[in-house]
Length: 373
Image (cartoon, rainbow, N blue to C red; front, side):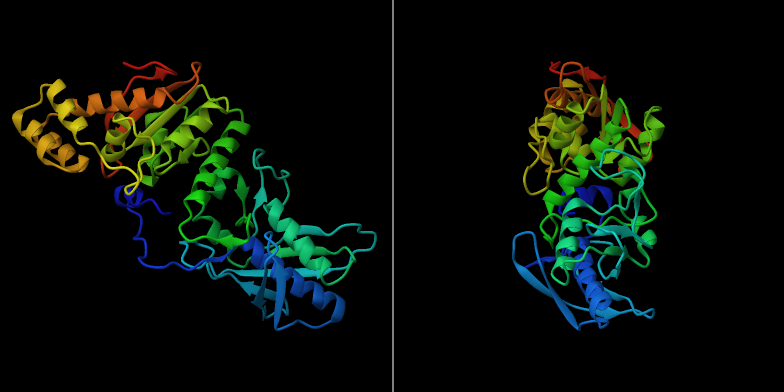
């Protein structure tokens, strides 16, 4: 995840500096392994390497490994993207099936199964996305015009999946075979944004009417305690993409949208900023001074508001002096910002939690779309 402010606030690891290396998606690696498996099925040998086509038409070559059972596999190289599937063994078995008219792609060990609608994949089938399916079929056709049954496996995939959002998406038993371009762009904000949209769509497809958008894992851990109607499925970690997430939720039939996060992002929302990335938006600290003055906070709090460059320091002074009223104003103003992003039949509220993610600091009223002031 690229969002530095999200990492600071939610305790994620550091982002490497300097030029970053691109990598390969699980879909690309699965397609390469499938071509090797098709060669084995047709010619009885496993090549040292195979070349396949990316969706762009570019061709790339992959070395082929052989596991202890004689199956070909490709080791995924995720480049410099922080991906739990980096190093995974994308393994394939291809076989002839009499009467098969088009290549059938199945999921084996470590590949998740779709259990909920909303992903654009058939429930009960392997979580192998459309582009990887097309890449696998194309790779097989480069070997033979004959349709084949191809089974993709990822040893250890079930454990890898525990580090992903698959459980929330209703994908059980393993990882998803993903990719749209075939290439992993390091620290791709686009991929993170797409995953947010996907999670919201899955929650909507279950007929849920209430969703909670959390800035990260600490905030998300409080969601079900703060909001009785919220479950793991209806909690989506949105990082810095508040605007994108709220607009998507509003357009997907949710009646109530909860937003929960820490003071830094709340303060930015209070200023009207809905992309809270550390590098893309800087906090206008005048909002802290306004909150301190309008809440008639003690002089120490007002001084902190004018002298500090961070919302966290301001929060810590408020906490130390027992003057948390400015936080009430910040969540109210943040909710007013969010309410401008939703339809009039949607209600949105904002909750601030502490930096440990263990308690609620302040919570706004639920505002209907367009209601502010």
